[in-house]
Structure formats: structure tokens, C-alpha cells
Image 1 (cartoon, rainbow, N blue to C red):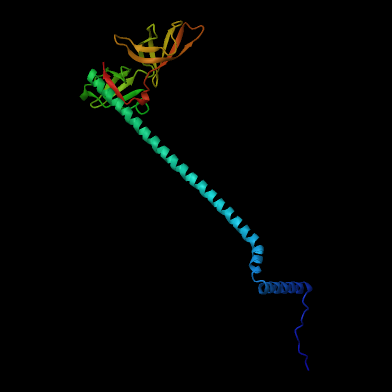
Image 2 (cartoon, rainbow, N blue to C red):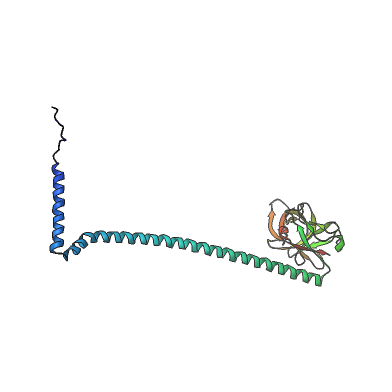
Length: 265
């Protein structure tokens, strides 16, 4: 006969038996406590679970505080962006007001000139940065009575050039600061006569005898019964052995910013 095989039972390790025994004792203790002292069981659970619950509450509060901090920073960023946008809007409005003020000033100036003098008012179509070097093209021409050689002014009696060419509806004005252009002027309080030579972009130079007592800031004018403003002395270059000194000056009007001119005598 064949012997039947039976599964062998391995003995339970002592450590496992000890854990099972401990678990059983703990279970009996809890059951006895609930049966004998039912009112004490909640306090036991509270003592055991209290620190755990308290820790969880602390952690939850910490996370809540952290979240509020992030929200606070986000709100500050959004508020800062809103304030920056408002500031940009205000600056844009101020710029618009400045442009309106400048236009009103120019219109008032045009009206005063039209009422007080026979000069023809013309708007500048192109300036030196677009037109030929140191020239202006204006929107008045033959039909408006513009003639070649007529003087051109910017602002109040500020002489800037002459009409070089006239067309049907436009005219070309050559500025006195055109390189190489020569104009007779008077410099300083002594009204010393000199020949101003254009250097471009509203700049000039003139040669005067050494010791002419010219200082920076002196006026340069076009001679006549009613002298016309021409420029202001910027610097003086004088060499020790040179009997002449070079006067550098600039016109009071920036040719790149001229918007209207007055044409006439």
C-alpha cells in the first residue's frame, strides 16, 4: 500500500505567538474596560487620540496660514498690476492734455500773427529728418502768394530760413543752418558783425577777432530796425596764437520740431 502524504505543520515562531498573545490581552483589556467602566472609555480614547488630533489640527492650521499667505501675495500682485495700469492711463491722459495745450498755443499764435502782420501761415509737411538736409516743405505755394526769397519765421520773429522754391500748393524752405550757408549777423551786447556759417541741424559758427568779449549765452541777431532773433552763443574756441576766435551757436528753434512757419518780410 502506498502511504498518503499529509501536509506538515510548521511550528509557529515564538515572536508571532508573542504578538498574538499581546493583541489578545489588549483586546480583553479594552473589552473589560468598556464592560466595567463604560464612562472611562471615551477619556481613554481622548488621551490616546488627543495628541494625534491636535497635531492634525496644527498641521491643518499651518497649511491654512500658508494658503492665506499665498493668496495675500497674489492679491498684492494683482493690486500692483491694477495700480500700474491706472498710472499708465493717467500718463496717457496727461500726454493728451499736453498735446492739446500745444495745439491751442499754436492756434492762438497763428491767430495773433494773422491779425497783426501780413505773414502767411503754413503747416510744415516734412522736416529735415525726412526732407532734404536742412530744408522744410510747407503746404503753401503760388496759389497762396508765396514767392521765392521770402523769409520764413518760426515762433515770434525767429528767422529760420528763406523760400528756395515755390510750387502750386507747396514751397521749399532752405534753413539758414544748411551746411555752408552764410548769413550776416550781429553777436553780443556790442553788436559785433560777423558772418554765420551753417553747420547743419540748426547749428552755426562764426569767426570774430580775438578779445571781442563774447561770452556764452550772448544773443545772435539779424541786423535791422527790428532785429530778428537768430541764435544763442554756446561756446567759444580760441587758440593762443590765433588772432581770431570761433563762436559756436545754435538757433532757438529745433528744426526737427517745427510744425508751423510764417512766411513774409
